[in-house]
Length: 329
Image (cartoon, rainbow, N blue to C red; front, side, top):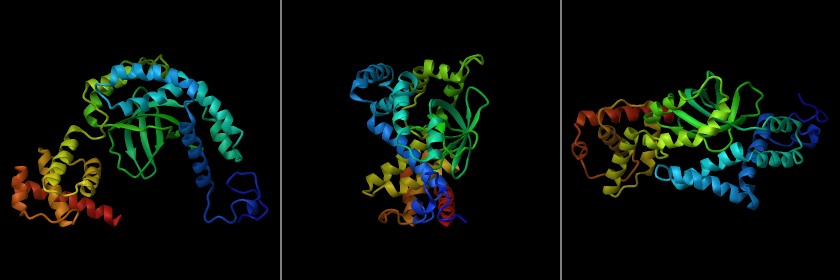
């Protein structure tokens, strides 16, 4: 039991009665997490400053000239911004942290920010996923980290990711958060990532290797067909087939596509034809009223996709079972 005159558990240094006593169910972790998120968010709102923009544009233009035929301009700029801050102009980040330290009241938050001196790039394979963290193994070494999940969207095991990481503030060993962009690569590109990993020599520092080869990493992904999407070619084919059908029949596809996306990522259905899953999804959407009813029989839906009714029904049942589990959860 915390006394009114005891130090507040949120770490502010104030007495409990003068701080969190009046707040409902406030935990140390919640208060600290919110403040750390504010520190990260405000950095990207304030920087780069006008005086640093020419340096950033010089780097961005170099990256665009190499990657513009592969990736969207907005994505190149976002990737390059982190490269600029953390690989080329770390003085900007360090200067920002010094300013923030003068504003931070809670000692617990200050301790975390003190450990944030050098964000580092991390390229890894997703090994395990739970409700709060993703277990990821570095592609160059045996290092395994626990990376905080940023949302509720499902993350499949076996995909690779790229981000800059910092300690997440929990104090737990090897627990990190992504500084900004957390990018997942579909399994279509596993081979090219594994080939890139072979270029690393054990005697090298991983951080130096990534910095010196980062542009080549993205270029090799682009050459392998990566265009910034989060889905495999097969998954994209399923989504595109379902979307084209609904749009052709003047139905809004968005609500159903959200469910299909999660189903594809979490269940990884094994189908020979993309359209078989798409047909099953249309039957599922019709029966769950995800769009206005179609004036088509189930046989006609299957024929439109050029699949058999049995194939359509197989994936309808899989999607229906998955959705039932999600709703119950």
